Length: 118
Image (cartoon, rainbow, N blue to C red):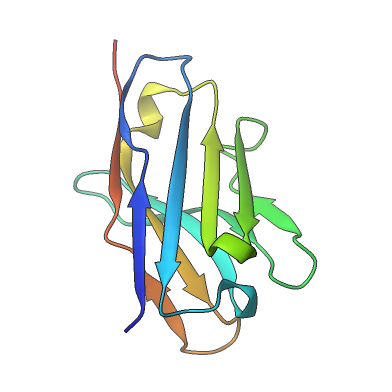
């Protein structure tokens, strides 16, 4: 049974930092591209960042580019999101996703809450 478990969320002041983790079990991360998504209350889920399983290439949403860094450790089956210079609008539930591009093969975690507030 595949399971993705996010951790590292919490309450942080504007300008602060958090590091999210996503630990996979029952799945070989090296076979999957990995991404982070987020969802604010009452809004649609939006894509944040993706990291390839082929060349570790990364892509970011414009809203987080230069502030967030996605990385992966396939030996530990773990995905990370380093979030710096956090803003109020980064408040959301953050989800990790493992997927095979151009297929229906994907898995989601349950999410971790990030709240940016003064």
